[in-house]
Length: 324
Image (cartoon, rainbow, N blue to C red):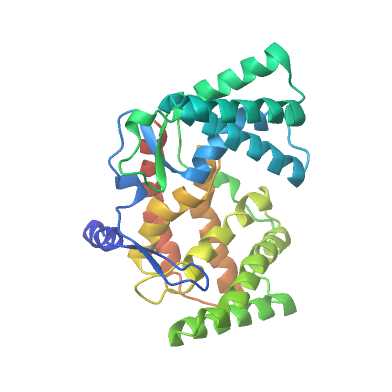
């Protein structure tokens, strides 16, 4: 098993490919996120993850709706640029951003005077502390090195939480059959290499329906934990399977080892912003999802669940290394 996993990991390291809608395929040559050379005391994050982490003090003040969120993130971007100009010692650029920051802080947070200036100064310091310019990747890349402010004790997932009141299988209803039909149709598109436009709409529909019907199944089975904690893990996995470019044909029912490594070692950690312990939900969620797919007739092959069982301890080690 260890030899097979090592071989799969080596293949996965060679190439990261992203399908960019109607645009040409973009090939990115780089190692997995967890194998990048990171300065001690730092961790690799995507730029979007960096912005979310930086924005936490503003998010703690409360965001009411999407409009409020957009305004808040605009202020975050201004403060970020202000800090960058301060580190570059560019006086003219700094003056331009400081005036914009003062206006935005007044309009968005209702801060003024000394309180406003103190807040801006603290956010400038926060950016420089979390993302010091002298340790960032060179040349500039799509990733940043973020300082680890705290360490997390990440224990294995407690499988005692996964309990069902209904032990028998639940036959598929019309909604389930319609979903399975869509997945099988999408599989056919993948196998025959259809144009992206032909299956994009189908893929988006599946990404939307899978979490809803999976959660409905959990509830019908009398799932005793919080169903949404598990159903919310599905969309990013389905995106990886069907809308992320691979060298081989990858289907929900057939995921080679190398791509499971790529999902857990790289894709998931780049794309999802959550608390470190929340990543522990992905292996059990996907195992439950494959149980759902089996009950509904998509696949009776339990091999993928065995692969997830084998991957889970390795993923735990990744999380412990990343956040300790």
